[in-house]
Image (cartoon, rainbow, N blue to C red; front, side, top):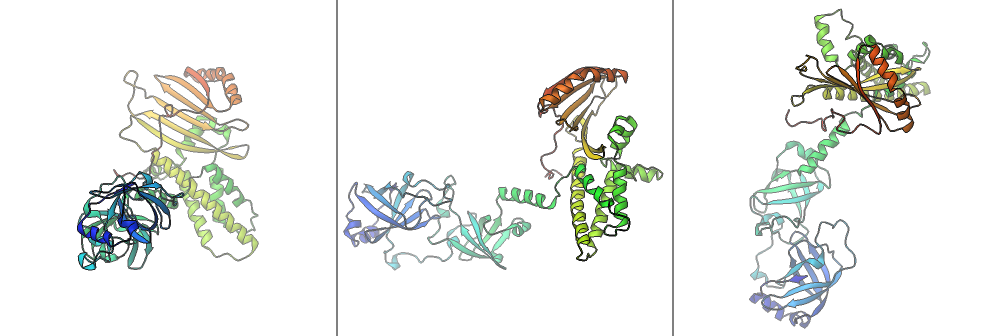
Length: 501
């Protein structure tokens, strides 16, 4: 490392009064030094050489710690003494990866602190007092008091623009700020502060008691929003897990009062309206199941006001799920005694409530993903259909895409249906059925080789079924793997939060 600074008269006088080991510097002379302090904000080192102190300044903050030893070599004497490190310390402190390597830096030799007090102005107790209005500095929270914040001023990054106005005096650079000194750009940001958080400070009014504008760094804000979403939004749960928790609610005997009768009735209504697998092959049942899946509850609510006799809203899955969640909350609010039966029922209700809220969260997200988009030529519906297969609950995932405008040649709208299902004793199957110009095209994917072989062996049977239903079959294909992103024309939004709303 090299160190340089113009030699003024005061520095020459100070050096002349020092010991020979410091004053009699010679070209290429090697000095054994020990670090006393490392002031990151100033990029300065105070070292001990032959029982005397020297203050050195580099162009960047250095990854050196007090107590470490190093060897300095004089590389230039006049007009400015320059030194470099020829033997850096063996170890480096943790969390210093962002600081510069010692051996890559140049140093400046600052005047000795033994200069008479009358020749230097008194140091200010607040390191922020030397900054000018408009200057920026980053700080880390050390303590959060009732009316104060204790912060540690952070080193300026090596790639940041540095000016003379950002120079700070020596010391630990710890500052206690009164809340009255801080003006937050976002009033809610203060509530997100924790010990260790970083904040950006801008000087509004300089002085020993400066006024500052405070804000959170942009990455911190994004991370905080994501954390809040994770904490407040329930984990999405498929309806299959909810149905598995509903069955135990209706199993206790009628005389068992640990679970309320109204709650049992709501659980029965949900289970009774879940179709069997064989019913899904009936077009009328499949259409009714989709209409009552909860995806269209709000539309069914409007239709019910116009036609009170309609049963569509009463049998809507989302409406029943909302009633179940409300009743579970009421049941859990009733004080329970300490009997084992009561405690077991309470745990069951809590787990069921968690599954119900998670299933409602998934259903709500499917509704958001199914809203019309102005930037898309297609209308997309994303839904999940629960069904029973030999008394065991399973789910069928559907993505239906339809062109918003009819084909100009035949007046028909093209559409695509994507199906994901995991049949018993088979691997997960992805299927896409598309209709273009009246022709039905079908493509399958599965990661299992045996499943791919079984599907491939039955493609001719599927073609015959299409023809018997009066449909015109097109190409049929089966591949090993998963549908690629280019095959899936519909992708869920990356975030629930939109700044354009």
